[in-house]
Length: 194
Image (cartoon, rainbow, N blue to C red; front, side, top):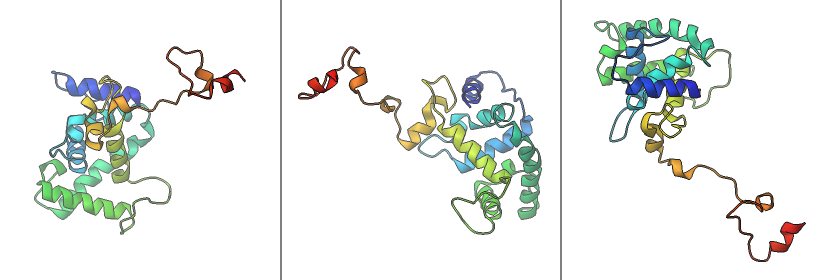
């Protein structure tokens, strides 16, 4: 996942046109358009600013190779759904934001079995929409690792209010007594000897 995030960061910041490893340019445009509706740009950055499409592209040739078929079959099915709901439109990226939301809502209802359930019990393979949604969130929230990997500029963390400086660090304990800067609490100095 970190390799995919690094690739996403580099591709999103590159001045030259991105070269995708799994997606064609047309497929990437569709995935980017879906990503931008699921995590839209508002007064905060969205999936597009975080370079999510590059993360997903890299994921599909590395750790998520098993999902290649889901995308290969899911993107044409997405286009079919677009034409079903809006016969004059050929692809998702050509629809208006309101139409795109309607398309995504229909896919969400279909993937949840007709009702809205936040967590679906495992029934085998996930649908294209569920898989794509998971990949979008992963690419958006992955650790930016000092701006060297994915989640470009920490866009996802900015949205959720997480700051790099507040990373988890275990508390000092008796096992740290030899590290510089370790100070025992008053009254516990004798306990560190045992």
